[in-house]
Structures are given as C-alpha cells and as structure tokens.
Image (cartoon, rainbow, N blue to C red; front, side, top):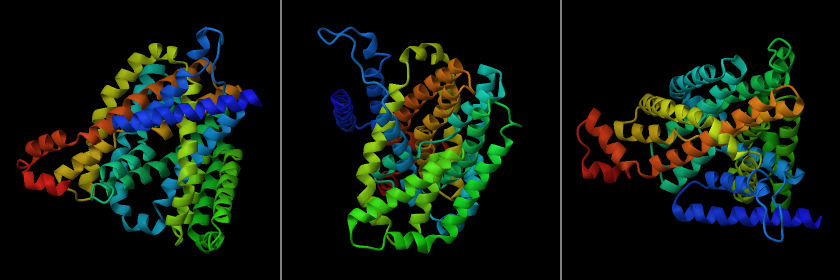
Length: 414
C-alpha cells in the first residue's frame, strides 16, 4: 500500500508540474500529460538503471486504469451537458450538412489505413482515429481564446455533436467486431445489442428530463455530486458491459442533465473531478505506449498528418459556410477542427482491449496504438497552435477569396 500510494503521489505531482508548464507555454495540456506518462513508464524509465534506486517506473495499476476510464466518462459527460435535443433539432439542417461534409475525413482515413495494412479491420480503426476531432481540446481552446461566444463556435460545436453521434454507432460496431475477432457476422448480435442500448439512451434523454431534474433538486451539494456521479458511472458501466462505449453512454447522460435547470451547478461541482480524471486518462495513454514503436510508424504518422490536415481544413471551412459564416470566421472553424484528441485515443484502446481479450493481434494493436498516440500528439499541438495564431491564416484566406480584410474588420472579429 505504501508503494502504491507513493506511485500515485509521483503521478499526480508530475501531472501538476507538466500541466503548469503547458499553461505557461500556452499549449494544450494533453500532449504534456501523454509525454509525462511515457517518460515514467516501464518503456522509458523502466529501461534506465538509476543510482541507488535501480530500475524504477510507475506501473499500470488498477487505480490508474479505472481512473483513466473515469476520465473518459467525465470528459464526454461534460460535452453532453453543452447540448440538448431541442438545440440540436433547431439547427439540424446546418449540422447535418456540415457533419456530412466532415465525413470525407473518415473516407480519407480508411484509404490511408487500407494502403498501410491492406485489411478491413485495421483500416476501419484508422479511419475512426483520423476522422474524429477533439471535443475536449477544441472546447477548451474556444474558451481560452474567447471564441466560445463568437459565431464560429456554433458550427464547430455542431460538427462535434454530429461526429460524436456518428462515433457512438461506430464505437459500438468497432468494439463488437474487434471483440468478435474480426468476424462481422459473428459480431452482428453484439452490434444489435449495442445499437439497441443507444436507442434506449436516446429515449431516456428525450423522456427522462423530469426524473433527472428531481435527482438534483436539493440544496445539499454533497448529495448532488453523489447522485450525478452514481447515475453517470452506473450507466457507463452498464454500457461497457453490453459492448457500448462508456464514452458514448456518458455523452447521452450529459445530454439528459442538460435539459434540466441545474446545468451550471452540475458543471461547477464536477469540473474538478473531470479535470483530475481526464489528466489520469491522458497520463495512462502515455504509460501504456512504448515510444520505441514510434520509429516504426513515423512514416505512417507523417503521411496521415500531410494528407488529413488539408482535408480537415477544407471540410471545416465548408462547414462554416454551411452555417452562413463569412470567410474569416469559416477559416477559424477550419483551423479549430484540425485538432485530434481523446476519441482517437479511445478508439486505439479498442485494439488494446481486443489484444488483451485474445481477439485481436497484439502486434497490430501496439502499432495502431503507437500511431494514434503519435498522431494525436502532432495534431493536438498543431491544432491549438493554428487556433492561437489564426490571424495570418485569416488574412490570407480573406485576401484570396474576398476583398482584403481591414483592420476594423479584424478587430470586430476578435
């Protein structure tokens, strides 16, 4: 117990330190958490003989694994809190157009995966990893840059909702196929069960507003936290048991609570839990990744970055246009949507889970995981940097497609 507590203390102290460094440098904390996990893992620190201590590293303990799962659950729960069915239905046409355009990135990812692996299942997983933008990183960047109240935030968040709804079905199918050993026919029943559970969640969101509201209609903050966490983790656990992603279930639970009058209070009370366990999730991703594998997938990562950055820029820009935005604000949408993050890593964990269950090739799972981590590291840094230094890109695009942007227009956009 003493060793376990010391290891957790080192983990949290490291996370706090690298998080502070990331904030000072104006970068997303996600790549820093992942790199910290890799440095303290058996694959880096565990290969170094230290004076006196010998070989020392942070093992993948049960607490860290469960903490990582909770990080996924809380991240997607908070995303669900930002949306409700009424809001989605009001803008369904624009969201549908922008989201459908964005699906071109799934096709690009599948082609790249097929060219590299020459098989359906790994290409299918790579397509998902490349397709999905990072809800967590984009939302945080919108808040940090002050764009959250601007017009460009709506198409970005709307497209993210489309992606998340698409990925809900995708994860159900991918999990069932991977755990079924790649046999689509054998996994058909599991896919049906997973899709049925998603339908039940949708009905729960639509008809269960009053019940969810009653859960949090009290003054005792402690019991509000316990009730929300209890419902959230229980439903997420039930989803995982039935082969549905816990992340997708958490997203729907968040949508259910978003229809109540207590969203702000829930966010205020649970935000520290979200940030803590989200940090553990990204740290865990690094902890289980062997950086030596990056050498074998470096060309793969470079190919994906070179091909898919332009595709996201184009589809993001067209998505902004679908919402009626001008060139400048559509350019911001394009730059923001390039970021990849938590969902790409979640998809990679499906391969790892399949390898642990004996239904997926372990070497192939390690390769896909290494690609996903490397790709997310590059795209998270690239995406946040593009958003932070968007002005030159805005001016270039406006001067190319429209009349030159004036200083007054630029100040108004800011």
